[in-house]
Every structure is written in C-alpha cells, then in structure tokens.
Image (cartoon, rainbow over all chains, first blue to last red; front, top):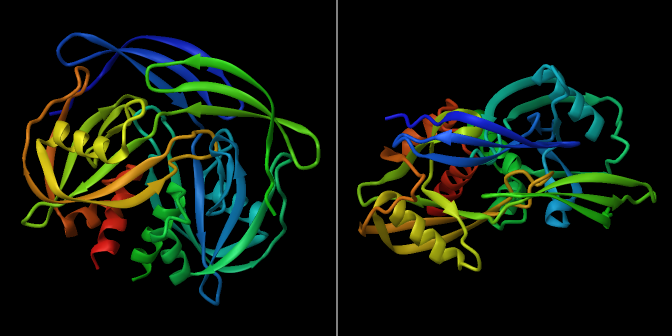
Length: 177
Length: 177
C-alpha cells in the first residue's frame, strides 16, 4: 500500500544560506491532517577517490552543528542547475587538488528523509592526477589519505561516522569486488 | 589543525514539530565571520532486526520531503531524555511487532553534519519474539522481510537509499563476519 500524503497547504518559514524551511499541512490516509517540517536542501555529491597506491582521500573539517571536526569524503553542494558529475569533479579538485580520469556513479542516498529533501550522489574516482586546490572563502579543511583497511576499521570503531562517507566507502568496496 | 568556529551570536528562527532552526554567526580562523544555518533534531535510533531464518525486517513508509514511499530500517526519534537502547527497543516493537532478546550497539552516524545536528544510533537485534504493533497516530507503514543477499542487491541497485538503512546493513554484516 502507498500512503501518500497530499499537501493541503504550505507555510514558508525561512530562506537561508544553505537550507530553506517550510511546514506542510498534509492529508493522511484516514482523512485527518498532520504537520510536516520540511527542510529544503540543494543536494550534493560525495567522492570516494582512490589513489594509485590504494589509499582513499578524506578531508577533515569543523562542522558547526555538531561542534567538532570530523573526517569525511571530499564533497560539496550542487550549485543551481549544476550537473552532478560536474559538481563531483569540481568539489574533488577544489578540496583535494586532484582530478580523475575515471569517474563512476555509485548511486544516491537520502541522509534524513523524514524532514530533509536532500539527495547525496556518490562517485568513485580513480586514475587521479594533480589539479589545483581552491577552497570556498569560508571553508577550512585538511586532506588525509588512508588505507582501505584503515577506513573500514575507523568506520567500525566509529571514528568515521559521516553518512555519505560510510555509504560511499561500502558501496565502492562492493563495486570493486 | 582544528578550525573551530566560535559562536558570535545566535538567532532562533523556528521551533517545530520535529526540528528547530537557528542561524549562528561564527568566527572563522582568519577572524572573519560567516553564517551557519543549523537544524536541531532530537536524534534517533535505527534497528537491523534479523529473524531466525536470516531475514531483515524493513518498513515502507511515505516520506513527505521526497514525495515517495521508501524502504527503511525500523527506526524512530528519541523522546526527551530517553535512553537510546530503550528507544530502539520501543521503536522496533511499535513498528514491527517484534521484541529482541539480543540487542547489540553498532555505533552512530551523522546524516548531514553540514547543517543538521542529528545523530542516528544503530542496533543489531537478534533472537526476536512477538510483541505488539503500536504506531503513532500519524504513522502509516508496511512491514517487509528480505533476505540479506536481497538487501545488498537492493542497496547496490539503489532501490534502498535511506542513509541509516544502508549504514546499518553494512555495519551489521561486517559485525557478523
């Protein structure tokens, strides 16, 4: 059964820098109504970039909502109307200084579909060569390289806990099997 | 290097049903300031529940932000001050009607740490026995059982694309190896 929720009305709350927020009144299957907080996000792309000596590129950056610096895949938000592969290649180069000859789509994921319309696409990048780092004005990060086995251990130890990073890693490993 | 972002000021925008939203003005390492949209979420728990005949319990429910019904692990939000294991056991029983004798912590993940403070905890539930389904008033869902190999295929085909579900699955499989 599909329990569609039809929009009865929408109230726009906030248009922000990264996200917008609206509240939808929806009609439930039993005819009653309910309110749904909905965050609108442009979506993004994360890249599992593997070097010729089998290391995975990661970036460490401070994330204000959780008040700490965490290790993540290179990634970024989609610019308006931007092609997802173009975005992935752009973010990989901007954040790590690497370009890739091979760029393989690994699918997408919904980080938190209960309230967030965000879609994160994932790519596997191989056959890397040097480009040019170019960070956003308010972006500060460090680049690290980890062995594949090390990343798996860090995921299982919960040292890596960013959703796109964990999913990108496991999908890439499965794809490369 | 840790690029901490100190809060200069906070503006509260919205207090909602599921999430709140605030905008923080932060001080960057170079002394400049930037704005950060921050969604406050209570956090939640997802459960990889495996039956005695090696099937994984999933629920399918309509998600308004993405306007479709998707397959996910049984999961739910933390009530205020609720213990995470209590929450996981409660949500598993409410959504699927099952209780578990074995309940093993698989770690946590950040769905979208760039703007969302949400933390999702994951458990592996085994040795299941019958309890009682009890859905929230505005909650409509169907329960399904899938073979482990089928879930992996659905993840790689992108038929399963909910973050906690993909991460819970891979961590559980890794844990059970």
